[in-house]
Image: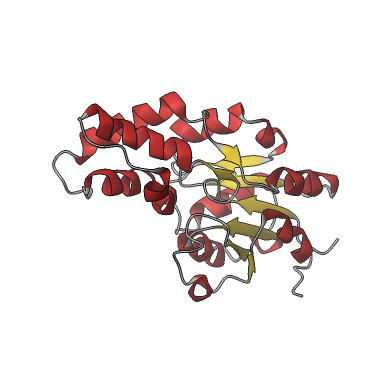
Length: 222
């Protein structure tokens, strides 16, 4: 089995990698449908695009793309709905708490690099005890660029004072792996995330794949 040598920090994407926020994201956009007299749709309809934020949710709920004249207003409505419910149904994936405890026990700094904007990332991570031990949290608007650009990952490494080449980045979307490669980090594709059943993950060319959060520990040399 592959082992990553000399790892000094582990960074994670947020939605679909550490936490399952699909129920709250789906509820936020489904409320928009119900408020308009439309039928409610099941969570299973929304889950595959939960990692795509407003664009994905509004696209699934209404068939709108960002160039639709009503999109911007609907996006803000979605954001306000989501702010009101973002921690009601969101939870860490099974095995994540154990994984984080193990990283802390090994004295490996860990953190979050997400494309979610600070508007949502801060209240979410501050509201969940899981993130109390995180050494860094980088949001989608922390730097001028979001993933797949490497800037957010490089900013995380900089704040940790750790060489990016000594970092591992774990994500459930192709853009996570692209960003990780561009930042010269070791990359791990989380196949249990939102896109696992939808994508040809092998084509992402991650250094490794994990099918459950705790499997990451098997890749780290003690």
